Amino acid sequence: YSITKAFCIAFVMTFFSAFDVPVFWPILLFYWVVLFTLTMRRQIAHMIKYKYVPFSFGKQLEQHEDVMATERGYFVV
Image (cartoon, rainbow, N blue to C red; front, side, top):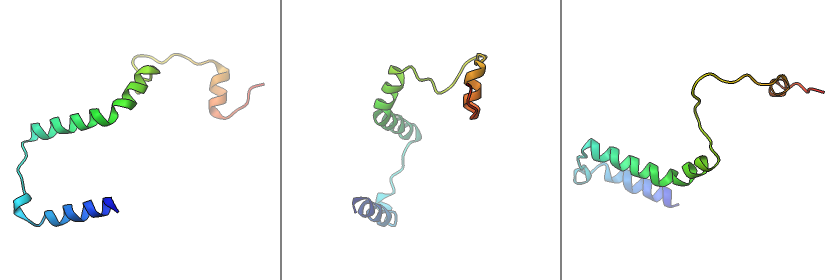
């Protein structure tokens, strides 16, 4: 209900020029960075704690044959 009410109020506000406030883009960028940091703080702390890196550097190491087979769906006995 709250989301619907907020959407309706915001939609009605778009029709009035009093709410048409110009925004300087560096301020908007800074606002986005602050919001992103505040909302992602817990997830980023979790990633750092468990040493998760979403990207890789350099050459990947070769995997053992058993690991590669299980990743493909084969069972190694």
